Image (cartoon, rainbow, N blue to C red; front, side, top):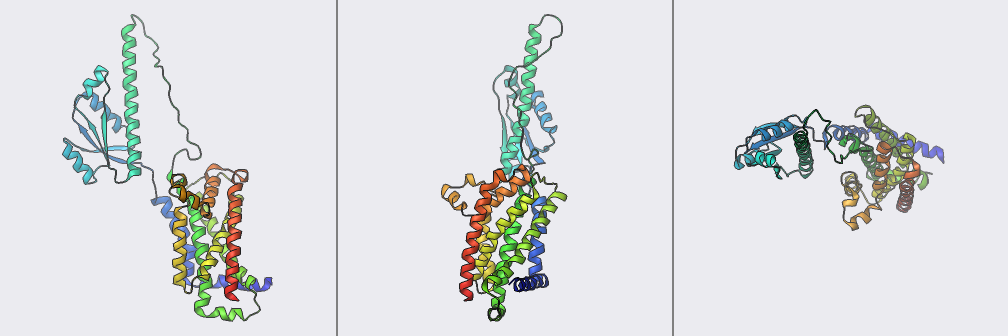
Length: 383
C-alpha cells in the first residue's frame, strides 16, 4: 500500500515542480504577498502634510504652531488665509488636514475662557482621518497642559510674598501601556496573517488543480484500472501539497522574522502543529472542489469563490465582533477564523496550547469532517 502511495507522491512532486504554472503557485504567492504586506500595506501614519489657517495671528497662535512644528509626525506645508483656500488645499490633496484658529483665540486664553481649535480632515480615508485627528488632538492637549501649568505657576507666584517655591500641579495623569505590539506597527499585525493566506491559497488551489488535471488529460481512467485503491490515490494526491503548505509556512515565517523583524513570542512547533490541523481543512475543501469541477479553469474559479469570502470573514482585516450577528454565526464554520487567532496568538502574544486548545479542537473537528466528506464524494466519483 505505502509503496503505491509513495509512487503517487513522487509523481505529484515531479509534475508540480516541472510545470511552470504549478511552480509559480508554489513559489510566487509566499514571496509576493509577504513582501507586499510587509512593505506596502501599512496603516501607520508617519508623515502628515498639514495646512495652517491662522485668523488670530497672535503670540498664542504662533506658540501652537510651534507645537505642531515640533511634532515628528506633522509638516506644515501650506498656509491658508481663507475658508476657500483651506477647502482648495483639501480638494487638491495637497494636505491631509488643516488646523484652523479662529479670531479671538488669544483673548479667550488670557481670560481663561474655553476656546476651540478646528481640525479640518480629509475623510475620504476614514481610518487615516481618525488617526490624524487623534495625533492633532494629542498635540493640542499637550499645549493645553503647558498653558494650564503656566497659569497655575502664575497664580502661585502672585500669592507668594517671598522666596522661591516648589511648584506642583495636582491632577491625575493617565499612563498608557500597549501589550503585545508596543509600537503599534501594522506590519506586526498583517504579516502573521499572511501565513494563513498562503497555506490556504496554495494547498487549496494545488489540490483542486492536481486532480482535475488528471481528468482533463484523460489519465484518471488509466489510474482507475491500476491496482491503486481510492484511499491510496487520495493520500498520494494530498500529502505532497500538505508538505508544500508546511514548507511555505516555514518560508513565510522566516521572511517575517529575518526581513520584517516580526516577533515570534510563542512556540514554533505549536505553530507547525496548528498548521497541520488547518491543512486538513484546506485539503478537504480542495478535494471537494475537484469533485464539482471538470476543468482546471472551473477549479480555479471555484477555489477563489470560496477563498475570498472565507478570508474576508477570517478577521484578517475586519474584527469579527464588528460584523452583523448573522455573519458572526457563519464565521464559526470558517476554519480560517480559528487559524488566524492561533497564528496571531503565537506570534504576538506568545500564548500556548492551554489558551489555544479550543481553536485547535475546532480546527481538528472541521478539518476531519470536511476531509472525510470530500473523500467519500471523491471515492464515489471514482467508483
